[in-house]
Length: 142
Image (cartoon, rainbow, N blue to C red):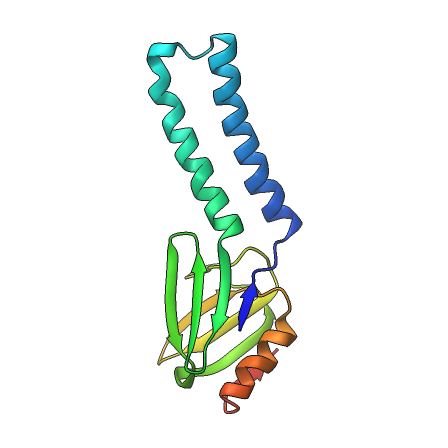
């Protein structure tokens, strides 16, 4: 089962605004002569940063298989075995650590001995019900 990531307004404005600014500056710089044709290499980092931001924005999702939670957020990818998940904190935001998420008030998944990851599925309740079907021993806290 695949879950897309919820996108907050702040995150959307930040990412899409940055992409518009970077690409707009590059294009206008080339058109109006702010960037010389011989200095075209300056546009390459702006394009790479824009591509990375768009990859994270459109490429963040979570997938539940029978045995694993697979997460992807641009270049950040990984798998967590569902039997290793011991607790899920609902409606919280984690400010440090691994966060393949695009919104606040998501889920903090605690697995292994001390590991945590923050995700923000489109609907927390639907995700929780799907993962609890696979492992009903997971503790859900607020």
